Length: 448
Image (cartoon, rainbow, N blue to C red):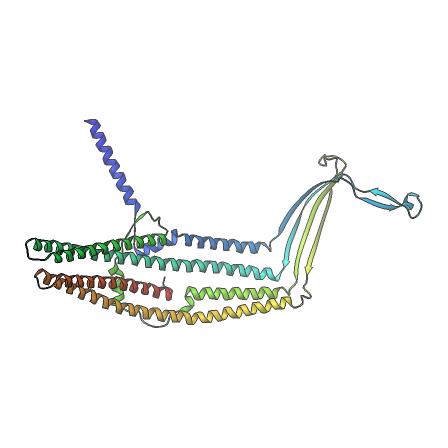
């Protein structure tokens, strides 16, 4: 008895543990939560964050060029054959015009030391530091742009899932109705009040409804997979969406977006083009800085030892110190017009950047007005499709009643059922169009 009790307790604990794991495996998201999750877990966002970190290191890399640079060196040399010099013979009492070969140096020598270089003035360095900071700004804005694109993609995928799930509910309801009609028609046929053709027609309706359900289920699976992929969720994980379609649609139907201007200067696309213009300006200054002199200073210290023994590190071997300090000045004098050509190219690039920024002002305004018009059109289309869906449903219901009373034929009922399914598909498409047009408008005015 005790053994069975222990087994029962163990089984209950196992079931509780398994249930806990399943609850943990299922993730629940509102649209905002799904977007926030994507901004943390999306691989695209992670790479953008790494770009920003790399840009920060690039700034320091550029700054470090102007800081002291210290280089250490050490050498150990064995001469296989010492160099020979010819000395005039008269130095040694020989006849004039004769030369005596003499070897200078010892078989082994070693030295070590270090050199310190310090940039004092370089126009390109000053411009480079400023350019690196603008480069960091560009990387940060690119990350922001990527985040907007991810949020936009998540919203579109989220709406697709909700619309597909709503469509499945309607298709399931339609299947139940078709199955009831088939059951009633079969009963009438068995009692001699209906023809076999009517039974076959009802079977076709049931099969069509079953196919629509299979289609809707596939659409849900695909939409969920796209959503999880966009969010950075493992495709095998289970997710639940907590927002409803009505929560997104009703506000759009109650209040229309007012047509008017918006602050394009705060839009990410305009700010990125402004940063690109700043980079072009830096490149122009960099080209002009080549006309300025380059000044740097250095300090060198070293110790050297010589000997005929391989071991130069004995205490008896003397080491000789040497050191020096100096200044280097480089001044460009003549480049045959090469540098001037670079300056002109940079000027043209800067003018192009200015033109692109001006074009962006008009483009953003055009995109905004287009997005507003698309929302208005989508609202009108949605309202029409809602009316069409309700009308098709009423026609289908009335035809069903007529069919049950022997007034309408099974063919007519099949036609009205097909009409209702088409109206439902049009409604789903208009829902997606409406919600996507709103999220596109938010993106156009920089609200994402």
